[in-house]
Image 1 (tube, rainbow, N blue to C red):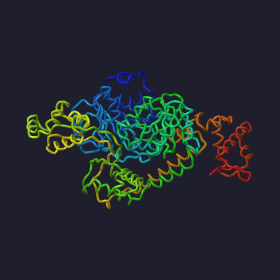
Image 2 (image 1 turned 90 degrees about the vertical axis):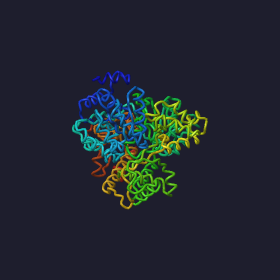
Image 3 (image 1 turned 180 degrees about the vertical axis):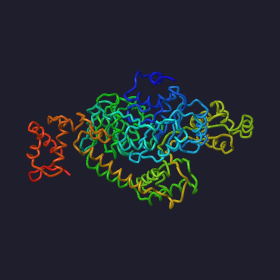
Image 4 (image 1 turned 90 degrees about the horizontal axis):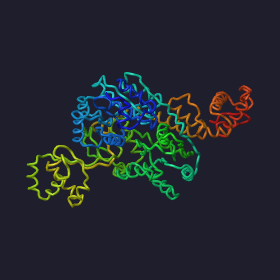
Length: 633
């Protein structure tokens, strides 16, 4: 067995592991169930890719992010490592062939979405594979306490019944203590092996700037701080508007969202990563899995609805360890916007039934059918067709997803594939009888080796150019040959996919777990309030984030906007926090005059107490009423 450090040097060219990586890898190699909590950019993929290459067998990786799966598979293949991915939208025949390769071939990594893992087809083939271990990425998705709960994740533990001795590694960048416990329980961990790096980022300064003129502030920030940047906004329309604004100010910028074509997304991403574009304005669709270490500035123009989402997006800054800034531009409209979104996020169950009924009509799907099937799905066209309100419809779809009826996946480009089903003798006979198709078939035979034995990928546009016909004519020819059972043809896909996880039922009999629905509703409200508190409370920003993720004794960072303001008052973070907590306890009991508060401290600290009280009043944490201090409610 190769040693982990040898594998790291051979395939990644690194001389040493990052903190915690070596211990996590060793735990996996010892056959222990392992939970790895590493911050964004902490090198999670290394933690399962290296041990998989150190031992025999195939590593099965479960991930909900198709784009990230495809990216990791491509990177492994570039290193000469055999890796495959199966996800929503792929044809049954392609899935069947890839799973066969994993059973009989020398494949080291099989990436699966959780929906595909629990399908009968995948489960039966996986039983025949020599599995080294299972890796569950974005493991927080298994927890109802988490911010991105995915019901199919709850099914993962069932696959362990067939592999009682095979370990599992779960990985995530964001998990509260409740989620940490829940992950281990839901995945039926045999060992309590938890490796957690501190989420503290000493080089990343968290800044909250109250602003009624956010666009002007954004321009000022980018003009002041040089280097690469990301600007997060809430919707697709704003990405283009803000990018155009920055361009007018002579700041190199572009926009990015999930509605772009695969070629557009790839070109924009490459230009930003290479430095040809300085600033990317994006929805939260951008950044996942992109390894760009020198991002100096991450600016949020709106407050996300959870600290998990904010921490992950802000954490894309400063991965090279150099000074970087995570800036939130905030005003009371953000609070109102989140509260409005919360009201929209939990539609009535009758609304969800209406949308479910419309889905069945849209796909012309019979009752009892559809389980395991995936369909191209454009929500804007769907809403227009059935006269549905887009935001409410989206939230109904999310509810149906959380209840385990359907699954939604992002738009990911899947190239066209082609296989000739008949032998050469029958094909020759077909060419003689169909002279108008003969030229197309000859060019296919000349251009694509192995087309009789396995599916080949191809571009309709390029093949049409070789044949000197239009793309429409080529498409008609391919469809006809498929109808004649000469070829199997799967056209390219670049639309989001909607998959039925269960067979279609009459909408009147659609069942919901109302207790779980209400629990998620309560948890969502709590997450929103924590996000608002982060923006509004004058407590060290880093401390607030670390406290949220369970690091209760984290020191003040010294570099956020709150800490810098305190330094002007000659207060170090530790002293300020100690005094603030005692002041809060005193005033929670009753309002007190300033003198009474000061006198409750030792004489040698009373000057610092006065400075702390001044700071707390200036920052709106305390108010004075009728000569007495009281906490601002």
